[in-house]
Length: 112
Length: 116
Image (tube, rainbow over all chains, first blue to last red; front, side, top):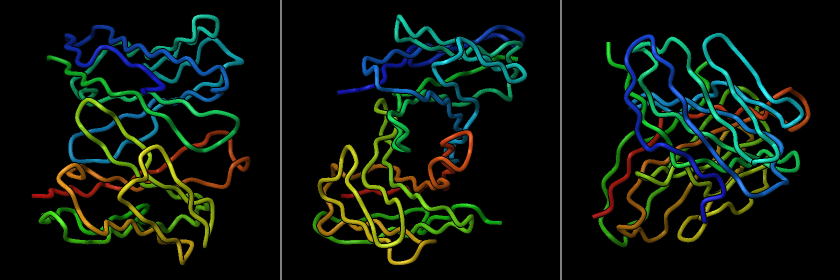
């Protein structure tokens, strides 16, 4: 079964708006939570990542919020731009292992 | 640096045919991975390797074999292709665990495989 559940499947946001993508997990052994960004015809690329010892990580317009007790984490894209239009995947890994379990992806479209 | 490259970019097979997908990386990474990406299912790990000469099964290994004879190359084989193996295949690589702050995986551009 899917170890990391992601929603929504697709998202349309106006330019300048906030995009929010949510993920949830059950396995409390997960200790690393990255987000990958994928443009059409390309491979995914690491966007931002967080470990459970912090509740928030911000890099530019991108922020991960992490709720350990709820076993949920989310990606917030502030001031969304058309260039942010891509598919976003959350993921998790456990026990220091490099193997990633990916969510099902969210296709984000930012309308000019 | 070319990063992670994959050969071929596209391929069409008939059911029962075999083929090998080649992944190469020039970053001297220890770890390499093969994923498949299907609509609505995200990326799923097929096999991975933690070093030259070693391989291990991922989430969906059935119907695939892999080999890592050289550190920079990771091959994915389909011995008898089935329509269920129609997918986009991605190779990735990463540094040795514990030698950096992130377990960042670097992905190739993908191979689109269709099995008729």
